[in-house]
Amino acid sequence: MDTTRYQRQIQLANFGIEAQQKLSKAKVLVVGAGGLGCPVLMQLTIAGVGCIGIVDNDEIAYHNLHRQFLYDESTVGKLKTDIARAKLKQANSEIDIQVYNLYLNHKNAIDIIQSYDLIIDCCDNFETRYMLNDACVLLNKPFIYGSIDAYQGQVSFCNVALQNTRSASYRDLFPQMPQANEIPNCNEIGTLGVLCSIIGNYQAAEAIKYITQVGDLLTNKLLSYDLLTHQQTIYTYEKKNSRPSNLSTREAFEAYEYRTTPNSSSTDIEDHSTLESLLQKENVLLVDVRQFHESPQIEAEKYIQIPLNELEIESERLENIETLIFVCQGGVRSMQAQLWASEKFPSKKTYYFSKGIDHIKF
Image (cartoon, rainbow, N blue to C red):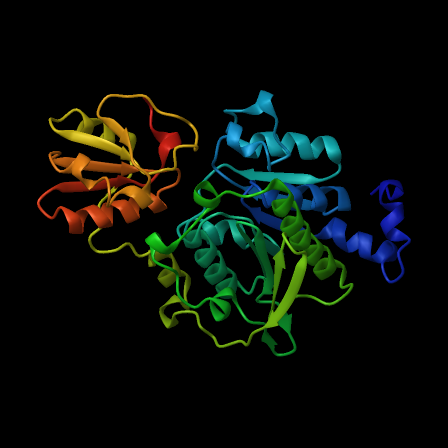
């Protein structure tokens, strides 16, 4: 290990060469190479973490570029894992970077996670987050949670080994996974790249502190940050062993279905081929419930745009349509629209396209 590049952190009080050696021997898995994952990955790489795993199965899109700084216009359409590895290797060629171009789920998580010392949650959905938490509890792995919501962000350090026990888990903070139609995301409400970097840097700082045993960690604590006011608040919470009792073995974990609970009236279209076949039928309409300023703008047959908050007053435009398919940016508003339509027009066939407008090929 060439310590020259790390000299400024090595000379810190209570850090030294011993802390740097701990970093070089650490293995950290980062789940998600998006808005939070990019700053986490870069900070761990330049700090000298010896082995970094990256899990992501997305391709780079133009709308990623304002916040996911490992990518640029020339990489649009390429795999995030491949580009992230190449960029990080340019920053620090000494680091071992392992990539997993896949969707992490309850079937493959344990085999991947068990090789790492620390897991960092940079994902963008609740199914993965709850699954990660439960896998880490099962394997006794520490887990750093981070999330953003509009102008606010949160960070907590879960499942850390303490004397004769472990700290609280993510389920002790949020015991139940929310219903699908209660879940906003950055596709729906937007986000600023600077907030992603702030929260991602907090997560990276917790990881470095944990590995080097420098400073206090956010164990049994939730840090909440407001970008608009710069107000930062730390809340405490207790360990309650909130994980479901039927997840105590690997076999039970791998049999557990991690899905947000949809409303019983919701009808989800999950793939473009199903959507395409429905649109080929008679008297079908695709209803875009985004606001008019949102992009991309769509021009197509059997398509109209009515924002979600105007559906009731514009309902006459839908009365003579037999089959309604709702779409939005990311699936949340379209689900709410489909639930509204199923009550408003009980005799109609109503659907929503959960993947969102970017996955429709006109």
